Image 1 (cartoon, rainbow, N blue to C red):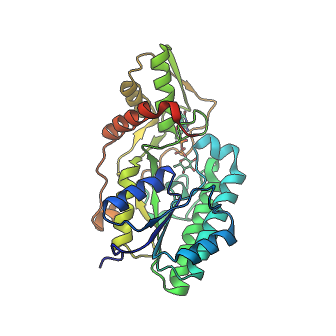
Image 2: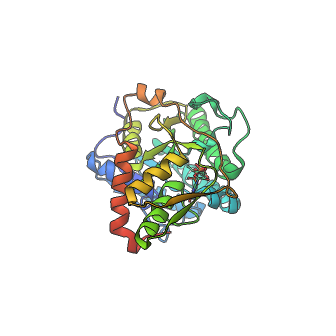
Length: 316
Ligand code: GFB
């Protein structure tokens, strides 16, 4: 059964961000052209009443909740208040309004950091709430877990076919390349690129290099979201990943090669490693008929190309 019709009006909350803009592109490419989006200057998603009025006025057939306060390990550790408070407020405002106006279809997006720090690998959806969280992103993870439970509660109490998806670490065009507060992949692309261009002999990379991470290109995530909106209707917050991970050391070497940096890498072990590994078990989404298509090599090359042509006008 296809739960999304071409004429459906779809509100993409967070449509100008890394994830929301990719979902917007994927929906448009798949023929869904009745899309609505608002920038944060036009609609503050933390404002419960404003969001309610917006949803009432537009009465979308589906809402994709891709708006969130996000950042890398340093941003999460330094600003836990914003990560829990802004995210709880954004998702509560959007989900409350969507319920009040009986929006039939909602896709809530979380993150693989919802799982326990030491979950068995690859991480199955059943690992949720079975152990302590990674301390560097506990505030963000708890907000996202609350969102999953709110979606599940709407399903059980009101019978609406709302769903949640949990992507692994994302990257791609339009990412935040801030040297301090971004995620590792865009942060290192920028640092290695600057070093290669200035002729620096070394680049500092945080931690020990031994943590493993799984990286999903945001265009793959966007296709997964369209697929799930069309076909997935289950209580379980479904994992979205590639099923493949690399060490931060391997990632740094790949990025050095992509950017043409030939100097040495220095490891700053005063910086936290975070969780040792968070590889998602993607067998459930594969069973629904979706798999990631963009390899890390391919995605790194195209993201670097994007970065090179936007270097002068980056956000973050
Ligand atoms: O991407 P990242 O910040 O997020 O860091 P997490 C991943 C790993 O890369 C950590 C190392 O082991 C970092 O120590 N790393 C090395 C660096 N150099 C750098 C660098 O220059 N910048 C950054 N950022 N890391 C985040 C969560 O965790 O993952 C969020 O904090 C979210 O809540 C996101 O869930 C997907 O994978 O550790």
